[in-house]
Amino acid sequence: MKAKKQKFGVLCDGTKVNLFTFSNDKMSVSCTEYGASLTSIVLEKNKNKKIDVLFGFSTFEGYINSNACYGSIVGRFANRIGNASFSVNGEKYNLDKNDTKNTLHGGFDGYHKMLWKGELIKNRNFVGAKFKKFSPDGEQGMPGNVELEVTYLLDKNNNLTCFYTAKTDKATPINITNHAYFNLAGKGTILNHTVKMNSTKVLEVNDKLIPTGKLLDVADTPFDFTTEKSIGKDIKEVGSGYDHCYVTEMYNPDDEHCGCPLDDSDLVEFCKVKELENDVEMQVFTNMEGCQFYTGNHIKGTVGKNGQVYKSHDAFCLETQCFPDTPNKPEFPTCVLQPGQLMKAKTIYSFNF
Image 1 (cartoon, helix red, strand yellow):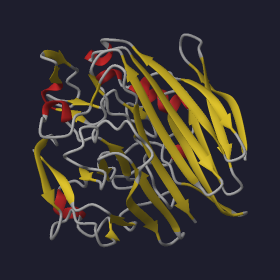
Image 2 (image 1 turned 30 degrees about the horizontal axis):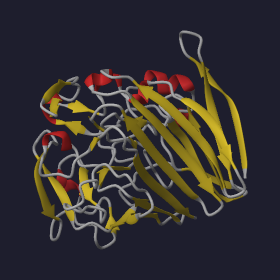
Image 3 (image 1 turned 90 degrees about the vertical axis):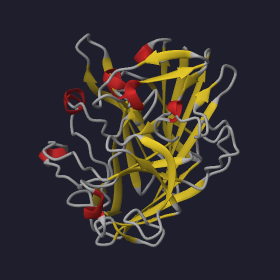
């Protein structure tokens, strides 16, 4: 198990930004203080073949110049908040309208464009990096001073575990996730990847992708991945592609902490993704109630790593989270973190190759 820190780039004010790389004997992971972003996940099939299964950029400047969230942390509320506003304890909060009339991934000043403070972590069982950020009251229009930590840990069994913790001094919605774009072949379309989900329901959304509050059965619909099938099999039946929140087996309408977990000891397997040509498999485990499945519908034209020009459906995202627009949906389990509580969200990406 190895780990190193190196300079990744410099901000316009002269602040140095670090890159952390850690590895076992089969795979390596890199991440940066800019956006607490994962920048690469390299699987070593053999001495002559390595596959970077994470889309992004080869240089620091690529991340600076992009408005997208490649591998980055998104929050304070990931995904969408309808009408760019919500109320907590009778007080209304107005947010940026950066997705038509709605807020997406924290608005114009998302966490993916902010500098986090990072450090390496290492013991004999795992190696990784921890990132910290203080989010002041009023940032992004959100209430409360919030202390955030994001930790990425790699173990000897090729499990990459992502821990997200938060505490606040004022009631506030919290929904933190990583927006990694995966391609298990490292390039080309993901339409031939196969997916099997342990999910029988998906959130119904309107034409702006804001949930209606209803959970729909996936049986006999294009959203049904309960039996393994290729991503491309039914994708033409869902418009430009999948961009929907599936319900995990952690969902429990009777659990008031379901949307803002305070315990990360219990996880469920949400899905398994396979790329058959290179025989690469990724499993996703989480303690979150939802997972946004996105098929890279709008990445066309992005110039990514090594000059590769990304096309629509060249990558997929599995963003574990609470349900979108939860602050405006009393029928959903609350996402509001209270003073004195510690949010503990956890997701594992487990690789077999």
